[in-house]
Length: 345
Image (cartoon, rainbow, N blue to C red; front, side, top):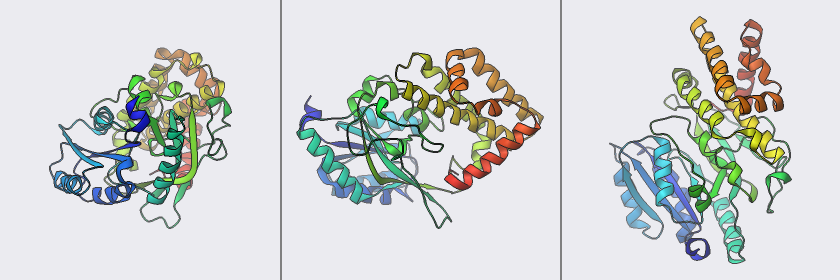
């Protein structure tokens, strides 16, 4: 197809909502890639100077930057809007308060360009990412070299076990755009934490993968106004429940042919389910504990096959789904330890 042979190599969607404080930094790290990239600044109904800044870059870099406006629909809606308007061979997301390593972006593009010229394309391209947590001197890198072949084409059956904290997130993924658009992914409007759906649903449709073992994405976290701040996550636990239920409903894991992919997907669902349980425990109180019990009861009743696969393949989930003082203590302790190690909020 034309876009796969000689069009833009990579489309980068930058969803923005009142992003005037950060979007310049994001743009400045990707415009040096030149006309090989298509940078789509998706303005999700901003009321600040986001549009003014985006149009400034569009005028300065007309071959690569495009400003797109839409009515407010939330992060996931902006991501899908960007994907629908993209034309590149590959598609990835850069949140407006994050940034990319420009040097490594160009390294990745050089290799992907060579491979495209040789007729080789991949359904998914992976890179490492870094938690840029406010106040942390030592930044946490998330890499995959222990689980994935490095700089070679591979399939799910070539992977090894993913360790805790090695989930493939939106920050580490670029999809072949046409595969992404044909797989049926839908991200709900006005919903938080939809990046998990973006990183989960397309996986069974991915037949070829390439992994660059270097840091590309820098994930800026630790601010009180962010959706991943613990206080905000506790307030929005209903959103986490919605995402978890959606992930359980997306695929019957018993039908996933690759055992290694099936285990990885079960692990991902288990992680999101654990987050739900941990937030209820952190919230505390009888009402929260009853809500935790209700969450697991509904998952078991509605999504039996996937629930059974998760329980069969991820044994520690037994403690997460059980509600008593001891398991609550374990969940709370584990949450604190993991937060310290992985800097996720």
